[in-house]
Length: 306
Image (cartoon, rainbow, N blue to C red):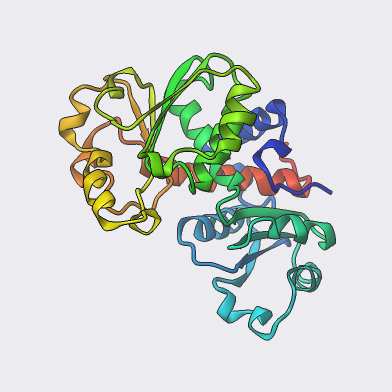
């Protein structure tokens, strides 16, 4: 029995197999419409989610399966003090696979130690978000035709953004990728990412505070929100916040084939005027999330289609 807790749980070959299956699902949706008939997915979301929870549910339903679960801790027995491993052992009696989001880092890993069915980490605190990483990889591959030989910029909250941490780790196994990290000093990537991922593997990276000076170098721009609550004082936030808003003016200096990704939700870090630019990929990215989760559910349940 396999679980998916950390994006590094999957080898590069397994990731490529997952992406190939996702692309086949996109091209041949009808072929997969009953592959999960009689199977059930439980969505245990101890914190709010829109895209991730609904994309898991849509994925299972399009595979012909059924869904049960809850969308907040308030509607579960966690309010009565039930532990995570008790919850998954019980839910594992009713479902064939569990997608779990939890505010505490490591909670899905703990759940996997006791669960009788596969556990999928749908986000644990500021730690990892492996299915978003698979979504991002599928989007980059479909938009650029490759997963190496590129310059990728990460912009915004790089300190607490679990999607950023997961994607940086996953991409570190592909060749000839240069990273440009765009953030205020207060929100730079954690030391362990710089040490374990970049420095220990001799991967080139650059840290800057201005998007304008580097946007012309990027093949992919991964935007995230600069969060007011992460700053020590309001003055610093006001001083920096507009620096990290992507608008049509900034895009004039970008490559014509730039791919703009965002894990969503968006607040104001990408102008809505950018949505009509063909370089904006974030809504296609959200759709890709459904297909890659369909592929993942199939893989973890050991299901295949002729």
